[in-house]
Image (cartoon, rainbow, N blue to C red; front, side):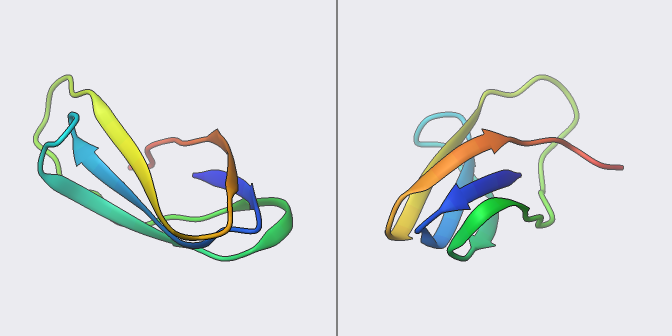
Length: 68
């Protein structure tokens, strides 16, 4: 994922709203767009991913992608 801002915490990725946690992505404060990554555990197929932020500060969320 690519973010910037005063955020110091983690994005929690769930398989749907209120669903199982499939990844946690740790982020740190940065004035520049910064890419972060973490493993994700999810079954094949279509899923609605739900991102929430837990921590201090605020983050500007630019994008996310999957790498094989």
